[in-house]
Image 1 (tube, helix red, strand yellow):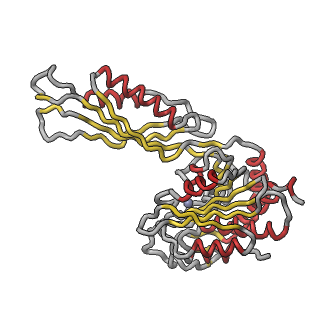
Image 2 (spheres, protein in one colour; image 1 turned 90 degrees about the horizontal axis):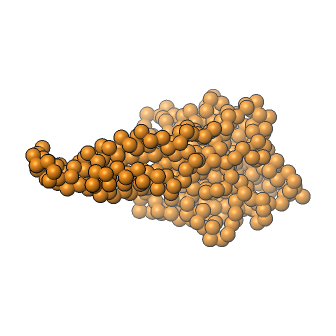
Image 3 (tube, rainbow, N blue to C red; image 1 turned 60 degrees about the vertical axis):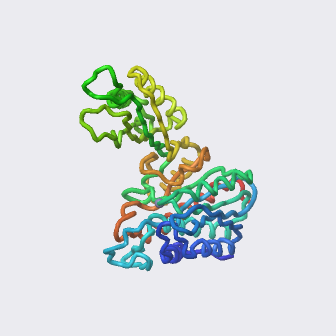
Length: 384
Ligand SMILES: [Zn+2]
């Protein structure tokens, strides 16, 4: 059975210029690599940013439980001008692998595929390993949900997932993400009654109601935060009143907001809470309301269970770091994994999305070792 070297594989992946949801042959390449070490591969399409669909990959080795999963994305952001070393060459120089995606996150994908290939070659175990690779994490974010839908249809259950996003800060594996805040956008439209501003009593001004609603929402505490997440926060990002006249009270006024919320809330209960505040104020002001929401991700949090501590111990053994468990950072495809226990652990993020993105070769080697040890420990009692 073949094994894959993480450095060589990372270089090969960087050479596919997979900006936005462009495939450029990368999923076929990965399917070939994974098929030849025993994985069953399935390409799952989702809507792309251009005319072509995005191609996402689900690959699975084995059929029994427990089922451990690795998740990554092959798409990269642009920002491709003024590089010292061409972004899609995968050049190694002075101990660093250079190129777009080296940290975010083709490097991480190469590490887990390398670790898995060695594990499968060395050990016989009971259980299964799967890989989810999305082609659109940086843009549309439809690939991972499409794969999750496919798994649900087939009744497939993942027991634990590792998201190989670059979670490390100052040194490899100094931080492990065990959750993320949720994010939800809202638009409030307040309808009053327009009229001449000189005739008090003949109009209902929606601006007054909207201002009171904003003040009320901003002064209401949503919660006090959790051990790992700060208090939820609602921020207004736009206010709009269509009105060309100075002496006409407008018919309607609207405002947009974003809420970053912690694991004390689900978007559904948060919507109810906000609706109640908004409608109570509006009613007092004799206005009608329209409220729309778009949820970009629910908050999630994995209890520090035995898998989390197992990973923490492995990190300590390989890097010397006592990894901090936290919920920092922006959103990732991890948000689509529902209630699957999971953590994010990957390369450093100090040059992601920047010009001259690069990762240290020794980090790639260490991360592969970490993933290998996780597999070995995860299946410890299941080795046959
Ligand atoms: Zn990423």
